[in-house]
Length: 258
Image 1 (tube, rainbow, N blue to C red):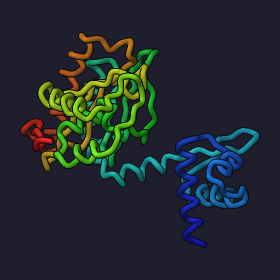
Image 2 (image 1 turned 90 degrees about the horizontal axis):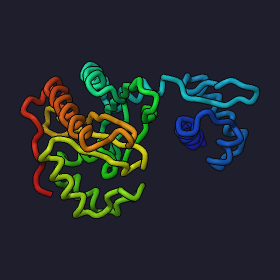
Image 3 (image 1 turned 30 degrees about the vertical axis):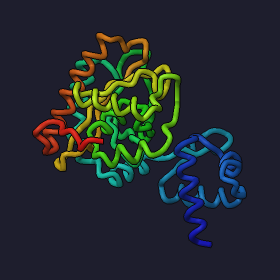
Image 4 (image 1 turned 180 degrees about the horizontal axis):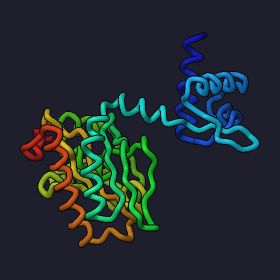
């Protein structure tokens, strides 16, 4: 019974993070757990510092920064983030756009750091948000320089379609990965969200495999052929700079043929 209570509390923490602010009633409906059990778990998470009340007449809950701190340690990203932030700041200065740092986690890319543009029209994504490998510039940049078995594993399952421009044909995706390796950066022209574009490059680690990606993220209205070429050049340069800081000094290494 104690194990079930722990599992329920962890599920609630995940739901609060996804749906915040959220109340007891909605959590009970979403998880199919009695309100009394939800209330006890929320109080436990609150006492442990994982969540806090959002305020208002009806108590609704949000996650605290403790979740972010633990997440940083869990994915081993503190050193990466420390090295990346100055590079990201320079990239934002040069592009005047929002900059993301993501890391691969299974078949997703997870956003671990972002620097926002000052422009009023911008893309918006919360830290911890995940992106599909095949339908994001961040994911394709990493996938292009991943070992063949990683690519094969992804292509062994049906590729999800998110918009009309999502690449779901394996042969088409493989051809795009070849282009990414040749030009040094990946693009996403509304393939995950129809109004969001991005240009990304892989960050390589000491083991000569991609450990992260940097991206310039813009509304599709600002992603022209000219801007794409410029963003591709500067984000590729930034990724190489960060790779060198992390101990990979020989540039991107193509993976074995997929």
